[in-house]
Length: 164
Image: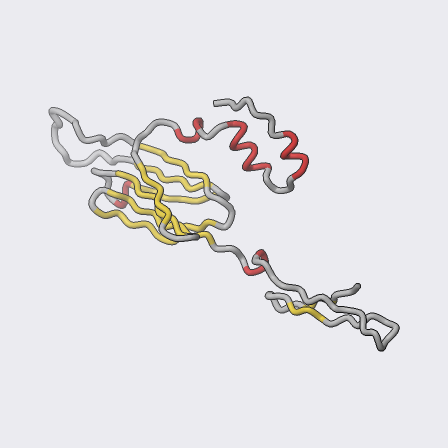
């Protein structure tokens, strides 16, 4: 899927959004692939998410969940069991690989397989160094000829000197 929209003006006026523009330009259709297994993405809070995949017929040892950089990969490999001679297979038992793009600072908290549904809990955790912080601004004192610089304390414990 290609878009007819040119993101060049946005690329010139923004910093650090290259990955987002690449996703928009190249489309997500290639990474979504076919619709097996079906899934839901649920937002449970401001920074909490859950992905539910319908993986009926798969056991825990047949499913692997891994993350690398900003990609979550869920893989299912059906092992040849002791099912005997199957006359008709109506329950999907094929191997699958499902990829999910994760935003920056989104981490997998837990995974649970219950009643044929694999639930993967995700949470966005912004590092303290990236959270907004206040910096105190010093002002000129009318009694003194030199500016008074008061140190501002950042959230990470470092002192910053403000100068005017």
